[in-house]
Length: 142
Length: 394
Image 1 (cartoon, rainbow over the protein chains, first blue to last red):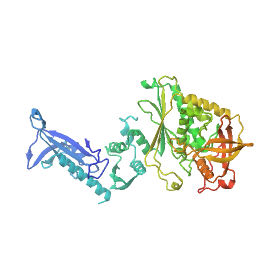
Image 2: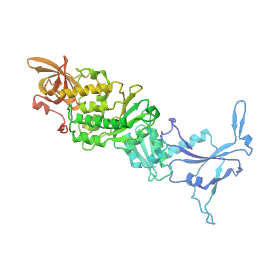
Image 3: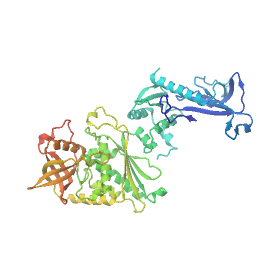
Image 4: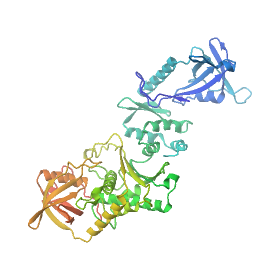
């Protein structure tokens, strides 16, 4: 999934084809340990998300949900609730997958998603701004 | 429109250098990037575009499509942008036909054979008219032949029946350093001819013919006539591609436009019969002998602009005919019109070697053989040397 903007964002450099490439995952099997959520990502997804050749920013979005299906979406009179929360993680600069000791290919790779990385409108704009600034530095050779 | 499910397989074959050249033509400069990965292009307005460099990356075609889509709009489909990236600078001519048959997605093969030949001839013989004005051609100039040879048939579009032709702006062999490039002069002249034939003016014998409208062009337009009359609609859409600045010849040329210019022309129901009448009129002109008339340019008709050039390139002369004087209207090529302005302003006497239509109160020209200042010295008084038009032995 690619997310970009077809409008000028005030105060942002106008990069016409800068998109955030998002890999969306959801899970009901999660718990927070030491302010992180451990998530077993498919090896192919891991390899794609950490691809050092990709010039577009790529993020894993992990959406945590309650175990009980009936609690995923709750409709109230005035609003609906989507539970629980989405978190983001950039795998840029993550190490390459190390082969298993028995020589078999890896099927998954567990990543640790900090709960501080909550995906909100503010954090999404911050990510986009940081990526814009990265492109400007690249343009300026700094 | 190109089959969009296949577009990414087409884009995969476009190299980053072609994209870079395309962006340069659109006013973007390469400013930086990461070697082997991405280049950053910036416009004067501060817009930036990222160009992927790794053609083997899985998402290369997808990223190129992101770029291509930035340059599409209501009149510029995706495949036109792709054409602008992969082909040398070309104007794009679309001949669109809608009949009850095309509604169901087919057309008689016989008609397509006729239409293709007719379009080829319209382009070739209009180009011949840009080189030298004649009413009839047995052979065309090398420049005209070269132009027609370098035109390319574009992929057929869905929705209605469209013949798309890419017309090189500056075909090899036909370079003209004065004014607009040869190919552009030709595509403008094609529209001028079609516009004239689609209008009632073509029925007025006093109305001078466009300078590049000859018998072969009129015949070819008549050949485009679709079968049946009910529910038939034909139109031509010409996309004039923004010209690249040419440092060598820029001083001689019109300022390059930053954006493409699109002309849409509804050919209407009568263009084919009018083309036949004009063809017969031109054929009749062959029976008359050319004459040499001398006089002064009275009016430059700057108040009669046509759609594309903003000038009709038409002049009226006051010429001597025996002991009396006559008005003579003639339409000129752009380079002839430039001379005409100079001679008008300096009140220079002019010789017109032409076959004249004398049926109206104001005479007009069937075929212009030569248009020159009577004093040979006045012909040379140009700021830049004007190359002679390509020789034609037709």
